[in-house]
Amino acid sequence: MIRSIQAIAATEIRLGSRNRWVLLSAAALTLFAMVLGFVGAAPTGTVKVDPLTVTVANLATLSVYLVPLMALLLSFDAIAGEVERGTIQLVLATPVSRSSLVAGKFLGHVSILAFAIVLGFGLTAAAVWMLAGGSPGGLAALARLILTSIALGAAFLAVGYVASACTRQAGTAAALAVGIWLVAVVLYDIALFGALVADADGLFARSVFPWLLIVNPADAFRLFNMSLLETGSGMSDIAGALPFPAWIGVASLIFWTCAAFLLSAFFLRRLEP
Image (cartoon, rainbow, N blue to C red):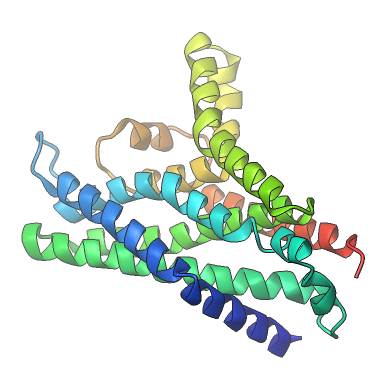
C-alpha cells in the first residue's frame, strides 16, 4: 500500500513537472511574495516591528487568496479528469485501492505546493533580511507561516478532490473548484463582516461571529498566524480578542483536510471500475 501511494505520488510530481505546474506555481507565488515583501518592508508609521515580521504578515494575506486557488487548480482534475479520459478504469483494475489512489495524488500535490511555498516565501524572506533586516522572532513567524500555508493548501486540495470525485466531467469539476474558492475565500468574509456590521454589539458579534470565522479554513489560517504577530493590524486585533486559543485554527485546518479526504474517498468508491 505504501509503495502504491509513493508510486502514484511520484507520477503526479512528474506530471506536474511535465505540465510546468511546479514551475508556474513556484514562479507565481515567488513573484507575488516578492512584491508584497518589498512593499511591506518599506518603513511606514511608528509601529516598532521588524521588516521581516511585517513581510510575514503580508505573506499571510497572500496565502489566504493564492494558496487555496493553487490547491484547487491542482486537484479539480485529479479524479474527474481520469474519469473523462477513461484512465480511471485502468487504475481501478489494478491492485491499487481507491484510498491509496487518493492518498498518492494528495501526497504528490502537497509536495508540489510545498515546493512552491518554501521557494517563494524563502526567497522573499532572504531578500528582505539582506536588504532591510529582521529578527529571530521574524524567522520563527516565517517558519510558522510556511508550515500553516502547506496545511492550508492540503485542506483545499482535499476539498478539491471532493469536487473532482462527485462529477464525471473535468469542466464541471473546474467550475465547482472556482465556486468553492469564491465562496470560501471572498464571499464568505463579505457576508460575515456584513452581518457583523449589522449586529456590532449583539449576540452574533459576541458568540457566533468568532466560531463562524474559525469554521472557514482560510479564516482559521489567517487568525492563527495573525494572533501570534504583533503588527498592529485590524486582523491581529480581532485574532487577539477571540474567545479560544490560537491552536484552534490549526485544528480547523486538520479537520477540513481529514473530513474532505474521507469524503472524496467515499465518492471515489461509488465509481464503477
